[in-house]
Amino acid sequence: MEAIVLAGGEGRRLQAVVRDLPKPMADIVGRPFLSWLLTRLNLQGVDRVILSVGYKAEAIQDYFQNAFNDTAIVYSVENEPLGTGGAIRLALEHAIEPQVTVMNGDTYADIELRGLLAARESSGADLAMAVTHLDDISRYGAVVVDEKTNRVVGFEEKQVSAAGYINAGTYCLRRDLFLKYPVPAKFSFERDFLPNHLAELNPVAFTAVRGFIDIGIPEDYALAQTIIPQLAGGGARRPVPRRS
Image 1 (cartoon, rainbow, N blue to C red):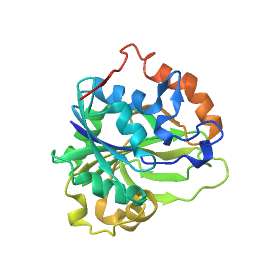
Image 2 (image 1 turned 135 degrees about the vertical axis):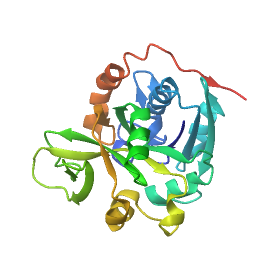
Image 3 (image 1 turned 90 degrees about the vertical axis):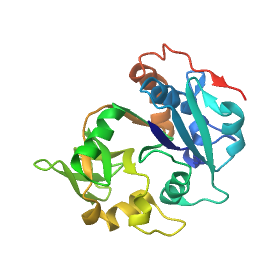
């Protein structure tokens, strides 16, 4: 399996607790957040990861080098911010598998990736989207899922506190997706691409998300210090960056 991790974020809202580092390098119990993500991918059999980097890319490249445990690492470097969509499009130029898992570098979603890939393949859709149910979706906005067809049928803006599904920030998509749906160099995958092409994409919703946390704000970053080791089973397998 092959995965793209979007690790180019600056993390301005975390500057009070994470200084002079890309957001995915924020410390979680003595290890970079990105280390926890890569460990999870490695344990699930992902043998090649494309790290999409931008802001202070050298901090990530120097730490992880070209491999991590049994997972090979290649880099897709943004010379200027391209948005999440532009970053994915650029990273797909490095992909070699016909379908690729894509995930945000600041969220940890406990997902069985083979199940996500199988959901996309069996549905015939160009895209599968992991969604998770929260009691309060006001921070994120809602993903509307048709319970009968298990398809994503709409998006709703952030609103007052309510329960519902949100985008868990993990996708499975075809490597040639943007050949079918032409896009500009800079765009948001979540705000531009998905809503504008929803009817054509007809994405399948993957609801088997066992745990989820976004470290993007200081409050959730503090919670992550406890929650991520719990989701990861305590990190029993200590990851080791492998040098060139």
